[in-house]
Image (cartoon, rainbow over the protein chains, first blue to last red):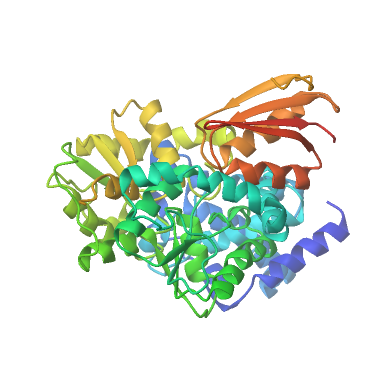
Length: 417
Length: 80
């Protein structure tokens, strides 16, 4: 690695060193409590997948370049020089971590591995060694924001074609817009994914609840966050924030996408609208009597996988259970304490990287497959696109024999007219 | 196949949700030579905006888009 690159990377590193990050990097006592918290370690037994090992790769660079001890007596501080090999190790650490933060809830000091891995991911971006695919997807999202006028007609055409499928789930009144778009002054802006499955059930439920809503032009997922690029993350976020402000909505509702929810909820700062997950919104409709669900629709035993970014990292735990208890009397938990639920193994951009990560995703998540199998459930419900894809892959790979379903789809299918 | 476009490779992306169609076309386009065309068949309406945005950022060209029923066909020319 040349000196210019090294200097640039260390500048990126330094910019990440806020008070919280320094605390995380200064504090680890290597107590080992986090060791078994990682699904990848629990599934494979490989030490490189323990949280402390991942931290240490970044921490040793921190000691070398940002701590006096590492500068004057590097051997004692276990300081590490930034070189090409280090970049490869950082890649292995960052892209085997799903950012689920299960280790964080076990750590007595609350050390946030995902935040530490954000340094690793940023250094990879700086060294142009990040997964090219994720950057490509992030750039595609940004381009849609820049050139919306060019893509608008195609988008409207595509959405129009979905209306019939929405009406099949909830019949609209004459003259009512089935999928409203660009509605100035709407109460709620729904930000979906770029797929019919993310729009049709949600639209049916909004219409059933009599919501004054409008569909966003943009997809919710933030590939910039997956790749750990703050600039791209912000550009992707800004598209939605600008749209919400332009339409003067009171609430931005994020579809079943864990990362999209976490980023919009926690990284946008104060805004003139509140941010909700669709799970929260649908639970609210049930609570307020705006929708009713038919329990006879779901007859098989149901279990629920908590998406890490929505549950453990987003606090949306009880709402999913509230919905499920209105959907079925045959609900079974997969864990006593949802906050400690195992990650599906697909987050952090791993699912978006597709077949490239499939082998790792399967071997690193056998513990999740075991957990699902032990429930005996026939329906595995979840509220995140990444989790849904990963759980589907686990279902095929480990022959779990479950039907993986989106929670919002189950709600839409059970609507009482 | 479109009558006036010579297709080198066909990608069946029907039923794939976001972002897999774009992931597959970005890989598939590299499997043909520059100047050749890939026909990508999708069913996800999100691809109507995803594909043009991807083409712009990747430097490739969408020659034509056909919609028949639920199917969307993109004819993508590799330019880079």
